Amino acid sequence: MSKIIPIALAALILLGVTACGQPSLPEGHLSRALTFLPNNASEFMYIDWALIKKYKDVADLTSRSDMEKRREFMLSIGKDQAGASGYALARFFQHAEAWGWDSTDLIWETMLMYDGAPPAYVLRLRDDFDTTAIVRRFDERGFTQSQHNGATIYSHEMDLTADWLRLTEFGILNTAVVADEKTLVLSTSIDNVKAIVDAYRDQSRSSGGETAFQAIADRLGEVAAAALSRAEVVCRSLNEANISAQTEAVKAILGPARALHAYQAFGIGYRYENEKPIGLLVFHYANAADAQADLDARRRLADEATSLSTRQPYSVALFTLNQALVDGSDLTLQVSPVNDLPRRLFDMVRRRDVIFAVCPQ
Picture 1: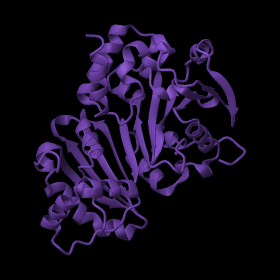
Picture 2: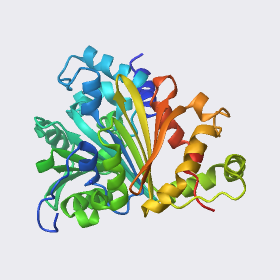
Picture 3: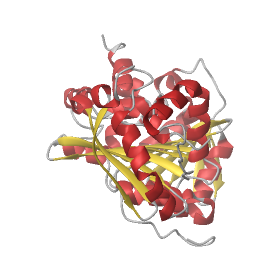
């Protein structure tokens, strides 16, 4: 039983200086997480563990807490929460003993995606966390140490026979400890780890200061989870998914002379309001005129289109549209997930079942 639960658990939950000084970090967990995002990253997945624990009234829960309470928390959030990231969730019940921490010790975490490169994770530990136990395990297991831009990187060659590697994810093989930010940066690629540290130290290398991603983060505000993508990534994957079906679906609603404009980035997030999950789908455009021109078309697509994966209207299978609005260069669709299950929204984005995000042809 204990070997089966973690895998099911992971499946349930996963469905924003100067070159020489410390960065001036923006307020809010999501904006702060963006400061670690290098300019070449194409997608950004995020979960706010502190907010989800607040929702569940277990703000003090950590890896030192009773295992039964931790088990109850992790299994419960798979029912009514969602996360775009989730480092080592499939090994949650063994991870603290093996590595000195688990997801309950995190304030937030992100997964960064790249075209043609391994993903990377950034994990923000709680403020009172002592990293000594983590470092001790690196030392005991023969990790080498190197210094890079104020961070200590612990590295180890791939060893599939090592018991400790089977109790976490391969990203552990290159882990930077950014002590002043109580943050771990992990990836199988040490180049990715270094690039993330560099982005944090020098915001000119980071998407934290980039207009599109930061604008979406500002628009989302405090959210329990989020996923942000550059427009070219969304457009490419939409074209690869089922372009003919999408074209016909869009034509049926907007007519053959549709006129959509290019957006720069797309993001999704959710939070609870009045004990109900509210989803936010945000498009950031180069200018306010394009956002306003697209408002009615994208509203109609979200309200009237049929999901490509479920073959049912979005309003029946995935979400109902509450309102659509434009503020500056941002177009926002506020939705309520069907059956109050926010993971439906993230599953939809993961499958690129987002006709309302179709790109100009």
